[in-house]
Amino acid sequence: MNDFSLIETLRWEPDFGFVRLRLHLARLSRSARRIGFPDPTGAASKLEEAVVGASTAQRTRLTLDRLGQIVVTTAPFVPTPADTGWKVRIAETRLDSADKLLRMKTTRRSVYETARAEYPASEADEVLLLNERGEVCEGTITSVFLDDGSGVLRTPPISCGLLAGVLRTELICQHKARVGRISVNDLTAGKLYMGNSLRGLIPARLVG
Image (cartoon, rainbow, N blue to C red; front, side, top):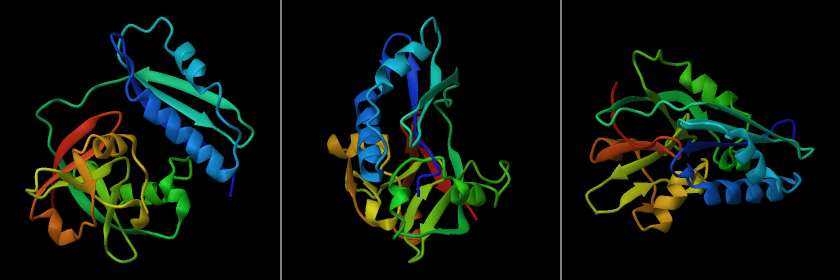
């Protein structure tokens, strides 16, 4: 149960710093506490050390293992063009809503990698996963948001078997999103968005 690491992937901007840093650190600490990992007390300082001297936006990846070791790596961040719309397909691979590790971001990613491998990049920018009941859960690297005309985005509940995404948490706290189950039929009845803390919200359409 602990042969993996927790992950946080953050965007760093020269004029702003780490985007949604407080929420990322809170999720990391909460996840560590739930699975008995050491408290990541040095995470913030490790992140700051990693971007010393950087002058352009960075994709920053932090891992915390069961011994409390924190490793941070960085790479230049290439933003998604503003007019981008993603093609999304549904995977045959299913998530198990009873698997509580799905609620945390970890290096245990085989189910997401299997789902992503079902379609070549030319056919799908992102792949959606359903649970054993056929309920919409999440993408392989994103949370799901549906504009159903209510004025507030709808996003699936954690109990369906999905990650507590940082962007998802922020939008819920800002009352820009609400929790509600989403069926496959719902996806074509409203406007679909995929999103994560690194890239924000990206308009999407279900194909296939």
